[in-house]
Amino acid sequence: MTPTLYEWLRQSPLTGIFLTLLAYRVALSISRRYHGHPLANTVLVGAGLLIVSLLALGLSFDEYFRGASFIQFLLGPITVALAIPLYNNLARLKRSAFAILSSIVVGSVAGVASAVLIAVAFDMPPQIVLSLAPRSATTPIAIGVAEAIGGIPTLAAAFVIVTGIIGAVLAKPLLTLLRMNDDVVLGIATGIAAHGIGTARVFQISETAGAFAGLAMGLTGFVTAVVAPLLVHFLLS
Amino acid sequence: MIETFLWLLGYQFAGELLARSLGWPIPGAVLGMLFLFLTLCVRKGIPDTLRHNVPRLMTHMSLLFIPAGAGILAFWPLLAERPLAMAAVLLLSTLSTLLISALTLTLLLRRQQSRKAKP
Image (cartoon, rainbow over all chains, first blue to last red; front, side, top):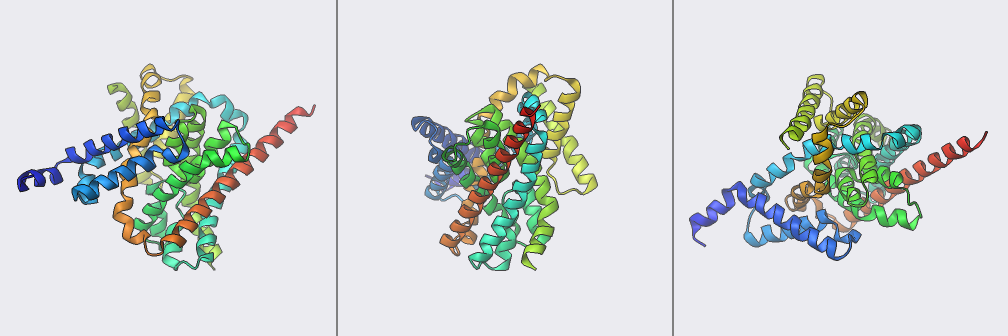
């Protein structure tokens, strides 16, 4: 490849957009081939393929992100769109509103507390503990909270993504093991523990689970933003 | 499709404006979701364009997280300091969050049902 052509490849947003769509399409085929096996998760496989191709092409993440930012931008409108499946499940939401809302509060507190306590047990340095605390919330909230309590924002963002992938992979097998086959329980638990990545995963399983995961994701972000600073202070003092 | 995006971006816009003007640390899109949900409750129905297009958008929600997933590449030096301990902390805390949330909800739903069963 001529140097000018390679330079164009690194600069053009086309590269990032095309590679993302391609990686997703291949990941989708793999997921279908293994009948939606949890480890054939489309985010996990897609991101893995993408990392390999970026390394092979010698592209940095910043160069890739010139195009990929257009795709990431759509997370905003798709989050708003979660209102539609939620409205479709209005009857179920009304019937169990107290149980659902209380478990979201309990789960969000557990999300912060488990990260802090387990990280302390593993002897992690304080800055890392503080960056781990908001990892169950969506990225923008986690970054804000980490900043506020003295963690490292970029590290917090990385923890959020890894948490989301772990939760998306494990949620369904764990609940099947416990014989909890209710789509509402699957959705709420996944939305609390694994935010949007978990929500995207359970949408592939059922629309009801996806709707409640979206609700749980939004409210967990809210509770985490309010509770995390106080809880971290209390746990670490 | 145009109307669908006008609805969605419009509510995101309203959410962002409110969050920013009040200085709340909540993403505008999350507020936009709550506003749109309340609008649908008041309207008692979903506009045709949203009912038709949103389910198709939702099927490919995972696509939108692939850039963030690839971001692990950029964060790798930070994550790789103590990789095993780090993986253990993330795995154990995510598992316990899933477990506590699912158990709490299951118990509360069961209690709600047994209450209703009583005369």
